[in-house]
Length: 210
Image 1: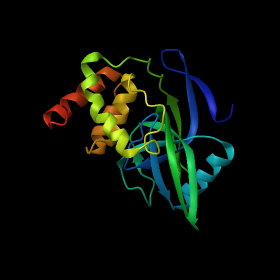
Image 2 (image 1 turned 90 degrees about the vertical axis):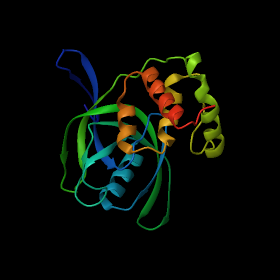
Image 3 (image 1 turned 135 degrees about the vertical axis):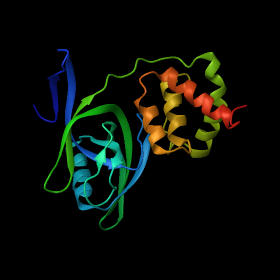
Image 4 (image 1 turned 180 degrees about the horizontal axis):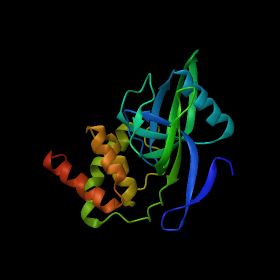
């Protein structure tokens, strides 16, 4: 069935699955976000070339154990689909890309190929239903608007959905100076309103909100 398949979950429901290359990183990509990457290892150069040629995604996961280079690292099971928004190769053998985040996924199984590239079958997680930003969380917006103004649309692409709880939560989380494991936990949250509540408490404690 190609790289997009359908399988049965234990409960009997049909779930969307993909077979994709996995790119473990010391970074967390969020849906709708952009992540600039410098690629120089042959396995990932080949991966990027194949994804661009075939117009297919790859998966970005935070590293659970191991390193970005050398032996294939063990990823956290929940990650984000990535597509290559743009690329350039100013120097031979070094590819600069911008990965754009799509849907979240959970790794069902994975294996390391002969080229030391990890590939996995992943289950696409259901897209969160759109939730309006609650009035009591609007105090987050002045900070976010300043961040967007400083970084610009090249870093936080339009449309800027300040009325969407999930979009606001993802955009604040991805720029916070916190440990990647904390970002991973916020990525894994299913409830965008719970994510906003945690972010507000964190920012309040550091007196970063007006």
